[in-house]
Length: 230
Image 1 (cartoon, rainbow, N blue to C red):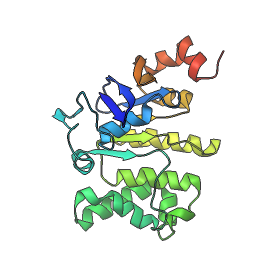
Image 2 (cartoon, rainbow, N blue to C red):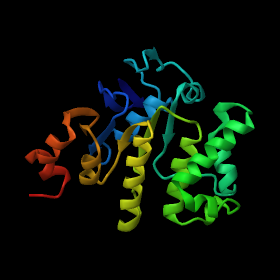
Image 3 (cartoon, rainbow, N blue to C red):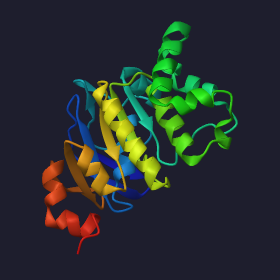
Image 4 (spheres, helix red, strand yellow):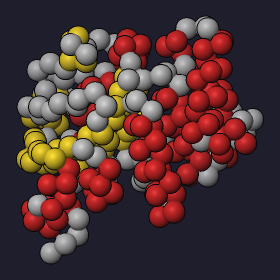
């Protein structure tokens, strides 16, 4: 796919695959096109050229809300929760694609609260008053309210304390174990490669390397450029 922001050529023929049940991660420097890739898939930044297919169905020409309805949810960088809404109201916003079936929405909310017990404790608290870690839980939980088959996670550990980073990655594993396929963008390349099955390295809008995550974790080029090893 090829994607532009105005006249800025953000993605230059990026091609990737995510198979059902996998965790696949995208790593690369700031500005490499990682977030744009997720935004192109979720319909927030549709590609100008190329195609995107989900479960055999072309989705690159669909509106974002229709993509959600097909089973793709996006937890964006920076969390972007609704700060003046309560935790419960934020979660309900994530379930809009499911219609007005209150029983289904309530079942989904219970699933999310089982995954993130802290959100149950904070149900009536405004999103803007939560800690950074709690806001990240809410961001992911809101995306999960749509019962996605594919979850797009953009920088879930950004700005979190090391203890919370470990918790978030454990939760990502648990979400995947529950049957959700995950495409992960993460600045903590080492942690991302450790939980992913496969990985792509993006450089200036192009795929520079691709392969099994374990192989890329051992690749000297990756270790030198992204893992802080000389």
